[in-house]
Length: 169
Image (cartoon, rainbow, N blue to C red):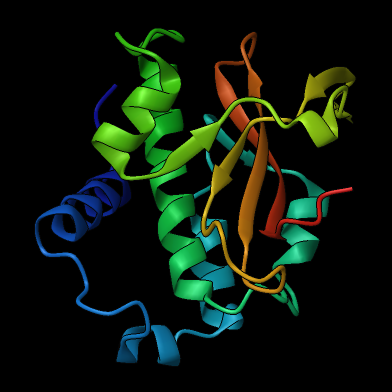
């Protein structure tokens, strides 16, 4: 599998953030990034290894999460992780949560006790969407971001069903 130009750009951006993190959470880039701009970049992340449900796509319009740039960066990391997952045939050489934080700077949780049994129907299959990226934690409810997704072990892909605040129901 040769990497596409866009995959190279995504990976380079991710590495740049690791070696030169932004000094402040609210930088001019953050202020200038709207959900409309972030939406376009998020939709470009889609591929055979990274799928957005209709529900997730709809959430990109008028999203209440206050930091679209931060959400985009976490989705870029998740998409890169999904690509690695697919290329490795589901084997990352280490635990998914460990690879996510070490290589992509995103914090994953594979379970959410409040959502036990959370399942979606997607392309005729039942998928568990408890796994999630913690975009922000320990903040007021209107600032806690989450990306809920399913690990499609048969399709070797991540299926994202929720992008936004913590309130996944």
